[in-house]
Image (cartoon, one colour):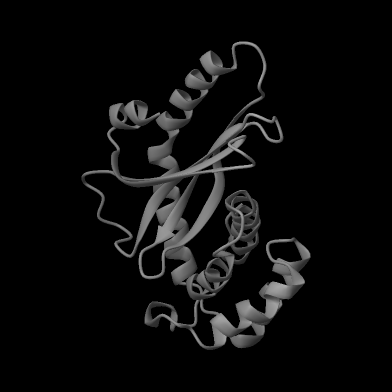
Length: 203
């Protein structure tokens, strides 16, 4: 995977890896960039990796972002690969990852444009409350997380998220995502992206 990213021009800036269920499940995060990247200096690109030898979920890859000021992560559903654990899985998975890596440049540029749209979308308190309720309905958050998201919105702990826009509200959610299972974070942040995309007119 790392050699494929390097061949595509990406530079690795950080990584973290975790095992669970007695080593049967794996999740990793690779922080990457391009040498000439100038957009989005307050957040970085990440690639989430997952695999399970107990076959609970198939191997996969997904693109996302990490916000520097508070280390929040969110994953987009735009780049994904999946391969069940069957015969020739490793051989096929290398082909799939090579194809996915080839798409990452365009996908990450799309993430940069998406975030700029989030920044330019003003959010009144009533709009924020409506979106938080809709996020619970689509299972981007649980009912017990709803008050915490609203508290992050009303009293941001980071100055970067004081502007009343969709990007600040989005990070109110991702702040609450901290500490939960990374696979759960992946699923919920994809749902959150889908919800926020409807606000800014992304299909």
